[in-house]
Length: 232
Image 1: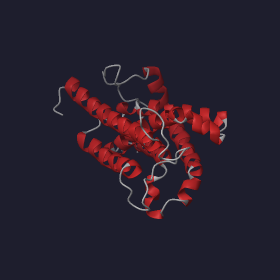
Image 2: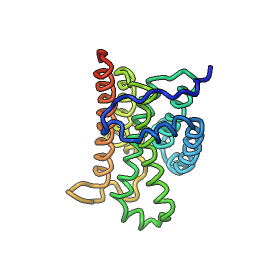
Image 3: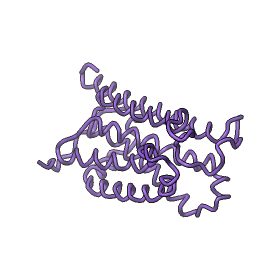
Image 4: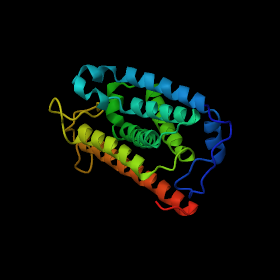
């Protein structure tokens, strides 16, 4: 049975946990099916964007290749499930993690490797599109507190998946002898700044944003329980 037109209440969260203006939150939830469609289109584009990396990655590791497309697919499925009256906390938590992590990591790497991307000849329009569209992923992730209170077990599911993804991408080559992160615009051992090489810079960002997603999800849970008078 489809969900009614009534929007879910906005929890009394502090601004640092719910920075998106209420009007924008309401707009996104009111036109949820349009948001789903946009994310599915982004997913299709993302798989197209990763087409080369699929050809050079062992088949067994393909689930770890399309990080951003997977994140947009997850949020499309999470919002669709909510609209159909079957919100799945684990799916919403996965979507939250994915859109926070990849929504921040891509702009971070675009800035950190700006010279290398320019040398590769990336078109300014594509650069701007990737930058802005990924930041939009963060915005939509920060609206998900309206449809889920992130139970700890669901956050655990998301932590396991994205923790594994982090390890496989940057620290523990499982198949093929090399990490399976998104291809960088320079060699992994290129020295960049503060003594870190390219792989270290990319991995540091991914680690920081994974920890941020975990902190935000658990904080939303804790504050929601506190203000609703519930146990965590």
